[in-house]
Amino acid sequence: MRPLDPLDGVSPLPRLLRSAPGAEVRAELDRIEALLGEGGAPAAAPAAPPLPRGPLLAAALAFGRGALALREGALDAAVRLLDGAAATFGEEGAAEARDLARCEAVLARLRRDARSACASAVAELDAIAGAGDGRRRAAVVAAHYRATAERIAGDAAAAQRTLLSALRGSEPFLDERAQILNSLGTLYVTLGAHGAAEALLEHAAELHRRRGDAVGEAIAYGQLGAAALGLGAVERARAALQRQEWLCARLGDAFGRARALTFLSELALELGRADDALALATSARDIAAGATPPLRTWIAYAARAMGRARRDLGDLGAAAALEEAGALFRELGHPLGEALAAWDRASAEALAPVRSTTPVAPVQPATTEQPATTVVQPAPTVNWFSAAWALGSLGLPSRVALLLRERMEIEEAAPRPENGEPVSDGGIRERALAAAAQTSPHVAVQREVELVYDRPDDLTVVAAHRAAAHRNLGRLAALTLAPPGLVVAAIVNVRGLVLPSERAAAACIARLPGLAVWLWPSATAPSAIGSDLADLRTALGEPLRAALALAPAGRVLCPPFAGDVGAELEAVEVGALLALAESLAPGELRLDAQLGWNGEVGASVEALGFVVTR
Image (cartoon, rainbow, N blue to C red):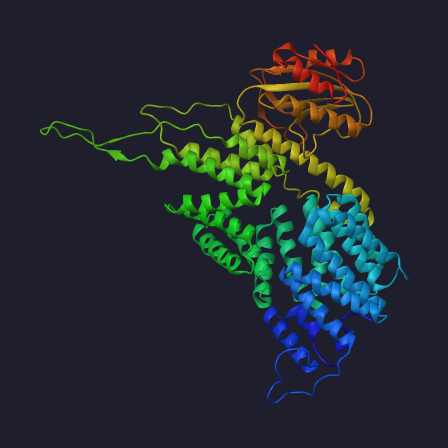
């Protein structure tokens, strides 16, 4: 028995939960409760006789209220109602309904408590899946939600394996199959496997549409929009996001509408339609602010889109909107939002002299008429690098490319002193931008679609490697904006993938069998450099040898293009450093005296398990 089965012949609640606005679902729940005689004053002329009371009917009603609360994001209420329904179903011997209610309660806890709930969620879901017939619906749902916990915990490979197992068991349950396809497609969007994601999500959207499940269809179209954006297919992205917005408007889904409208406003900005972007972003912010509780993340994203649109329209209110977004992102501790806010601050600082250049009439004798002159403010020092590095570290080189392009456009529009000529950089900035912008994976799409059905484990390996490479490329692109000065490490006795992790502060510029070359901005703390090398040693599972040197004037001029052998550098020599590293003993770290690391710093690095020599 499923949790809502006791309402068969009494209510269309299962269909309403899939396709009706929240107010309509709530009205139906209230109608059922009145018929049960369990709340509210009796109607003067009841439309139907009261239903006989019974624990199963009460549990079904509690489950329906809990499912609506989960859909609307009222997670405390969802946990309470779903736990109560599960307990009642258990007392009445309805094991399948009990386990399905327990699964939904676990999902509500995962959404509410995030990573802190993952371990207990996996344990409970494993217990549900392992009880009774593994082919029953509750076992499939438990496996699906276990994958959600694994994804939240950051284990994408485990999440994929679990989702594929759940997908194989879902053939008798098309509704669950469609939900699992949604989750698998969302996972591939996160991994950057946009071709595979698009194929799965198109299938999911069609299954949801056939079943009349508007909630599931809206989720599928939202992720389809994200996948299409990753593929550079702007029109496909717009169509998918418009479909999501329309479905969410019908459902009264504030979260989905705010998300879709914000994405659409960003698309309009990219296409140069600032007026459309402003209208879309304003709608998104109003919807997010009107939700209960307010959707603060989407308020921040919408406020940012409004600020950028106003800036492009020359509106003086742009700065206030951008500052509002930045303050919210900082308060929320949202890494991407904080990086975008840093980008906005850099843009505003760079644009200030462009827009403050005004004709000023000089002081002249009364009898002399002279033309007004233009006062050119000196260009400020703008910190583009911090935002670019943060975006690159999040694995978003395409965003770094947009930042580089915006910086170039602003600088080209800036007024120059009289008789001032632009200084040529030999095309370095253009090449850096082109290299950062090469990450749209159009060529790999067809292969991804084949792998997702035939060899999904291979796809996970490819996607994980590509995500690490994108992160490294983003960091190298960001380093083109860093001040001169690099710490360079030649590392010997390395095997396999040696690109720096998400937590690292390093970028990799060379990798050959048995060796690698990493670098850090010279301002990086020695403890962070030591930690990065210790993490690499742990990942390799064996001692490594490394020689570190300071390149005081070292710079990254251009990240590598596809097929290139490494980044284009200035004032960095690695040949002698590699030879030195080869001569070291296992576990030895040789420090260049120019690094200036004192004995205390050396001791802290030794504490990480290295033998430090000078």
